[in-house]
Amino acid sequence: QGHTYGDSLARFFYSLQANGRTIEYALSGEENGEPVLLFYPMGASRSLGALFDWPVKRVGARLICLNRPGMGQATPAKEGNVNDHVEMHCKDCVACLDHLGYSRVRVLFLCAGAPFALAFRARYPERTRGRMVGCSAWVSPYDCPQARLVYRLSAGLPAGVLAAVAGTFVSCIRSLQSTDMSTFGTSLVASLPNSLPSSVSEMNSSAEMLHSLNEDQANLLIAQAGESQADIDFLMACMGPLAGNVGQETGGEGADAATLVEGAAAWGVEYDKLGCSIVLLHGDDDTTVPVECAMWLQARTPGLVVHRVPGAQHGETMLLGIAAALRILLPRRGAQGVAESEPLHLPSINDHEQTVTVDM
Image (tube, rainbow, N blue to C red):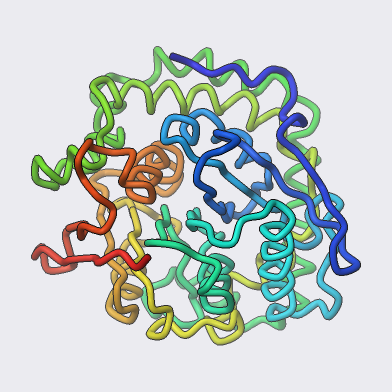
């Protein structure tokens, strides 16, 4: 079954005043579902949390997604440096969770949401629950030699210069798109059925990306027959609303860009001290963040395991992988009789089985 978003995602949006700051967030999924905190990728906003309403409902969860400082009407960080930007976002998340009455949440992150998700875990481990899951996770080019050269060169620029350049670039792109963005999504969706061969659709589905797991493990993650087509339908359903909401909320992209090229130390993160299980879904054909970067991170982060998605690129793993990511995050909703306390086995770098034990 499909899902209708209507002309606006505004019904998912909320704001609050806390600690002298304006905090903006989106709530989607089941009202009484288990809370999941989403950290969105670069160029997105809380709108993405609203767009995930349908897959989140399918696993019975409640998704919370905050605008980062400076996005929309959210109050920017005061000091203007990377550490303060990350710190303020983490504090905003805590204030929002307190406001909603959630003491602990599960954490899901996409691409550039990784620094903020890891920073939240490092600062507030008592507010997280279970394993963390990420799709196409960003890896610091300051720390990782496998990162693309252009990112490593950017890491040498002063944060203020990078923020100004990134902010100007994003504003320019959005201004170019604004004239026809309202019709772009509709035309793109209309073209998808004829331009996507079934073999491509199947190859990039969440069912296929988990093909290397054994039958019991696959049953944990694949909820029902026809899941592949449901994932494709979800991607198509997202196109129109996502395109229509680009540019409606802007701001803070420069600070986000400066954050991405800094190292984990500036984020307040020590990879070897996160103390939790982390599962990353990462495309083998990712040209934005090469899979070698994810493997580099796995080698330095106890409890982190990378599941390599054959043939998948960066965006495909984020959108088509969201259903699989949610089932890994909330395994109780996967196969009947599989308890969350049981370990999850995923392929490691050497193609041996590695056990990821869930902390509660």
